Image 1 (cartoon, rainbow over the protein chains, first blue to last red):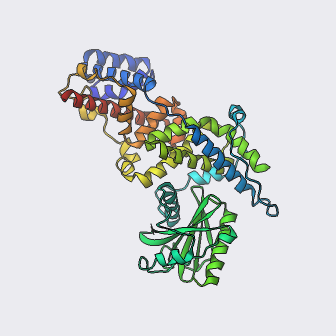
Image 2: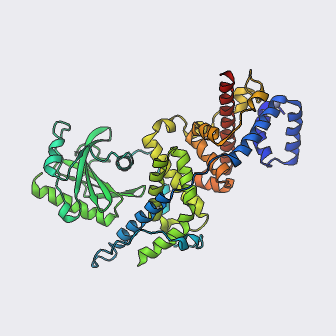
Image 3: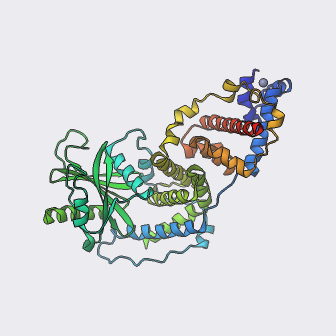
Length: 272
Length: 187
Ligand SMILES: [Zn+2]
């Protein structure tokens, strides 16, 4: 056995995974080779230190409360489209349930393909849809939702003047439950685009606006509205007034479609 | 209400693993604030895809979503860390033996290097400097003490690749330890 073979076997040996013959061979090499013996000692110390010293960070109580509240909101939002005639369910206070935590962990859940669709998306393929979702995630996580924060379309729309070749349609939809939050410049398909930000309850919506010739996938044939699901976000694509528009949010599809209809009608009527 | 029944079932299954989820995110993002954001995002996604959970190890299911969310976050916020060590490069990396002839770093006396104690602070520093793909496998194996099989499921890799990647991670950590010991020795 040479030193290279020995090095690759040291860790499996320490973890007790070598068969007796291999183990004996390695032990023989270690007896005759001070360097590999030192290496093995180091790995043993490293393993012990990792087990006893490496920090295991516990989830802060604040995070548990935050997630409980967010899940309650999510559950409330999900139940809405299934009962279209009922009024919105009352917001339940966020609280934690120790009883639930102690309950059994493994349940057989009716299977659906949701998870499969999520994880079989090709990772390398960088389509516009994926960029739309990535831009959306980045805007939320980087805490950089808007460059111009205003609920007034007469402030947001002129802000884009001189920054882009297009003038994006902007309409405040507060009365319909989708208040305008602001706008920012973003990049899509390697060109600057207008990003309009709306909100529905606590869910932000990004609307990306670019000239209709840009970022259109495929043959360029006219299409109606297209919808996509990517990494748990819903994405709608449509065209109006010579522009190509993408709306993305973690809202469910029915609510995002509602928003899209309101946006298209509202901006067409206001002529903006 | 149907949706609240679903939420209750989800809480029963996912909440007990929030420490594991946070620990992984904390090591990958290396700060509390970002780890909290990532874990919350991951839990919301998990809830949305809950119908796709078919039983089996709940911790592996949650951690798979957490790591996916972490790497999306890293790709956006720390692209350099990802680009510097892609999956293919990691798994084809030269081993310690190729580069350093098996034993201790040349020119250093192994006895003196071993004097440097590996405490929590030093481990955090050394692990934090490893590429994220090494960091996550060390966290899952050494801190969460998960089986190769569960790790293989989380990383969507063959068990053999998990074992060889873990070995490389341990060798990289060993090398980093030597370098830090040598650096202190010189001071
Ligand atoms: Zn040797």
